Length: 483
Ligand code: SF4
Image (cartoon, rainbow, N blue to C red; front, side, top):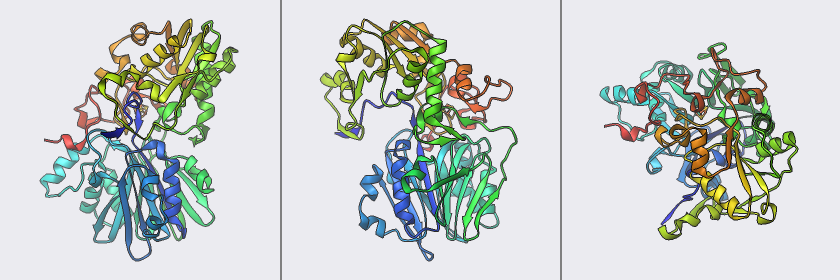
């Protein structure tokens, strides 16, 4: 059976990446490149909708961007100067084609397509109400709720979108295309990212700035929390229907792990932020050792920061095989335990006889950490000290990151000592929540008004969790679970 690589399941997964272009003759080709740069934000499906001035063209498919948009013939079938695109990672169940975005709908004002990064926390409740009113849903995504709410609203496309979004809760960054315009919008707290760029006379929207770099676009600014931008022939128009002054809660996990290190988020280099978190970790949890080794790739910048701050040499003591990340023939049960070695292998020459500090970005279930510690010990390490560049992940995310149920999170089951025993490390430390905020250039977390969303570490959710029944014990629900 061919399946998604089975040993990647011990990381939290970003659920979507979005991209849009207004006013470029190669809008679809640029969107495909932008989506390629955002592939880390969703690998299960991808889609592009383009508008040529008369009609919409769409291609959506399962798999990677290259699998779907790697040929000139496909790009040529999507002509137009406006295009939006989406990469998807599904929360649960099969990724089915009707859930692949951008979603498209015909309104009385014309066609409309939308791509969404985030998760609505009252989508079930809204959907139940809409179904009672006679709405027929085509997909099982929360995003379709927005489309139906727009159908029930009044006015032009922008007014309808604003009215619809006033009814939803949760996290959303959207790109939408409506004939003569591209619209970008971020939720009132700005949980998920969205940036605005320029390429010659064209305007570009993307989840991350790395998608601008690949097409040579210039970064202009963040779309603000609660802001809606309309890109049309007159340029960029900004409307701020959802702005709540002083209440931004950007996802701090983007800095720890989700975003690409070469992206700039909220004016901060993700790579530099990770190095600073590593340095905080070194100050907070020093230990005598011979070598600092990252768990690649995501642990690398924090390990560099740890090594620089501690003065302990940095070495690539674990080598990652980059060719197993896509699909793999699932191994038979009796050789499954070898699985971690498909992705990581110990560089024995740098480990044997050494006291090792291993640096990783997070521990989710702990299963991969346990195998990596075992691997490093088998390679001859005399001591293995695990250092984690995030606080313990004790709560599920409801804002567009795929997280296991809280009961399956190692940090929910054990205290730090218990976790260290589970993974088999001689010691285990996490950066503190205030250490994390210091690394972000702040004196500490403001408990009255936290500067970021950090709910997976603190349980302090910044919005109502209507669908989760007010509790945080579960995970974000898919609409497939509606009875
Ligand atoms: Fe990010 Fe965690 Fe908040 Fe989810 S709960 S948005 S992963 S900080």
